[in-house]
Length: 189
Image (cartoon, rainbow, N blue to C red):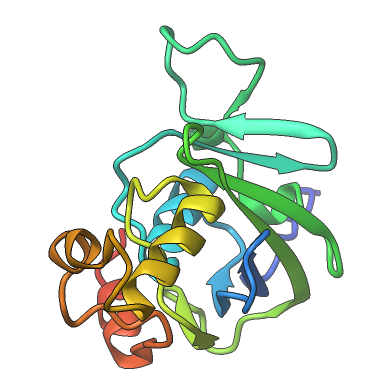
């Protein structure tokens, strides 16, 4: 008598809330993500959802363990994120951290709001909602971003014109375009 085939777990959908830490007002996104994706793909999803440009190193810290991109020149005690499925290392209501750009140290808190069977199967991440624009790359972390916003808000500030030129006249720290984020998320493979 042949043994039954092993039960293959159902595909899952994980609802996450990612928030940039140490900045007020909070910059955040709520996402629905296929649970079976590798952490390396979750990184790409976070880049798109938050508005980063993927120029810098990053790492996840989940339950006391670090996960990151394999890089023989960067000697960190990390597990290769390419080998780990998200659903294998997170649980419902868990909190974990995602750091982007070790120089500016953009730390994000990620809360797993739910893990449920995906019906129909979720093929790509979806941003459900969010607030506020992502800081520009290389603006000096939360302290530098706060200084930049202060200068942009005051036309008499000595660095106002410099920041306008650098960030662009149309930079709006309150802006968030849900449709644009979702259009880009559909292309994350």
